[in-house]
Length: 349
Length: 82
Picture 1 (cartoon, each protein chain N blue to C red):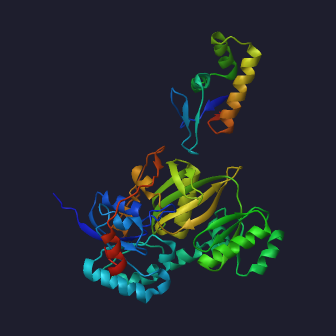
Picture 2 (cartoon, each protein chain N blue to C red):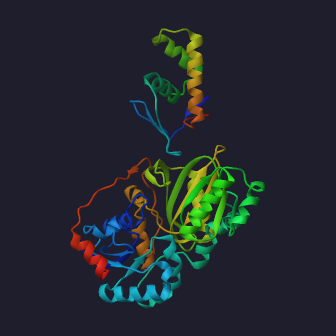
Picture 3 (cartoon, chains in turn blue, cyan):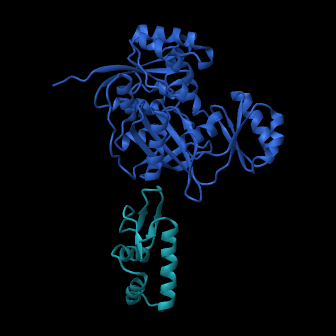
């Protein structure tokens, strides 16, 4: 009988909060992988990320520097962690981490650390700021949008957009504005937190859908699982959802993957308008927080992603169960002060 | 001819799930009966006749109500014209 290999996999985004990072769900998926066993290394930014304290899921956690601290600082910390843990794979799960990790891919590979990420070109061209060009290039319907870098540009918007419209940050945050004053308020709120630019986007009325999936970099779809959000929080996050089988959504996803030759996990945020047209609102270049639904319907996307990262051939994951729901919940953990103290003072737990 | 979409699931308790859209609905026992008859390939006229045997109401009211209900099924993409 073949013994399963044991892989040491570092996973970030352990912030299982009301606007959750995908880390904890990714780890659950990896723990259920059929083709390998895992030792999970958590990569945390804050000492109160709940995943740090989930010892049944995370074997050891290291605090890491913020993506904005530069790739040399990040690499230095990864080198330290690698020296302790001998990492096989890193799965970065935050949008803001992708830029440094894509840049570090070659250097990490030299050290024997594998990743399955989109290329820099794929990462850049699907960016919110480039969405109109992206839609045109790949034949996808996208809402009209405009990038603004100066508050004075807000005064010209009424000639180009109808209200309400969306005011979005480059990486995070989106608000619906019903008038010019609200646009100004949201402009300041988002720039104070995330900086410039700001994206102004046409508001498409309709029903929200998401697709998560995995491309192998050759244009082939390894997985695509569409979901309808059933319960949405005030932050716009899905707190409940159901797997569906809409063939047009699957075809749209295939078109996206084959056109871009997408490599890695992703999430398409879609809106179906009253004419039953699907608009692509955003393309998130990483696994979403609701990924465990995909695992629950038979597509272990994180496991397939690790196999791709390790250079294995992975075929399409095939059929999945339709009509399965996920319902998220909050859970209070009791944690000893010593643990909080350890991560806060040593940066490790 | 109106028919219930093949992939739409309808339970005996009146729960309907459309796997294309992810929408779910509940209908009362008469709704279940109408959907069952549509699934058997019955026309609206035949359905009205069948219901009239069971329910004490006039043909005109039954026909109107059945057509309204089928219109809703069509609006919600549960039924379609064949």
